[in-house]
Image (cartoon, rainbow, N blue to C red; front, side, top):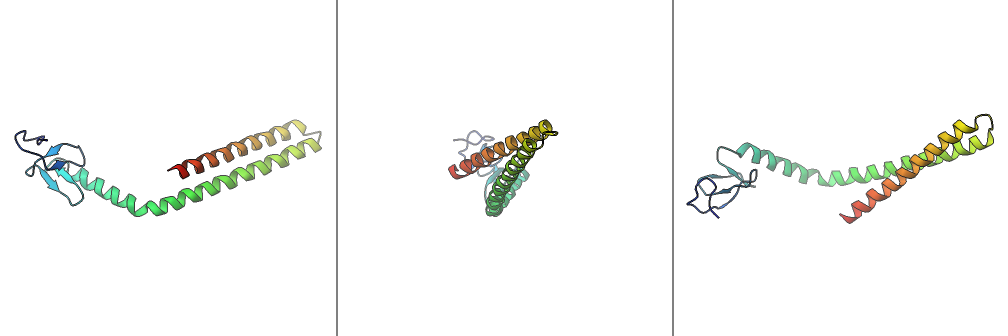
Amino acid sequence: MSCFYHHDRDSVGGCKSCGKSLCPECAVDLGKGLACRGHCEDDVRALITLIDRNVKFSPQTARILESSRKIRSSAATFNLMTGAIFVAWGLSDTERFSFIIILGVCFLAYGTFGIFQARRLAKERQET
């Protein structure tokens, strides 16, 4: 493959930012990637910094995602229990029957939706 800027020269690699093939004269080696001299150096430095930060925080991110799944499951369980309480209360109190039952059904529906979402996210997490 030839250099993007000098078509008569062979390339030594590609720019980490724009992907253009570069010869030794056009390439700047930034340690963890090549950049177009005078064009993409700042962008490649930013990409290298971003990748290093992602690698550093990867274990913390996994813990945060697991904690989020547990919180979502707990909130869904709370909504299911609240919905069941409202439905039971609505069935026992004939004066407030319609509003309390409707409220309870809404909590039950939202709690059921939350449980399915938490399970779906857990399944997706296990597949990756």
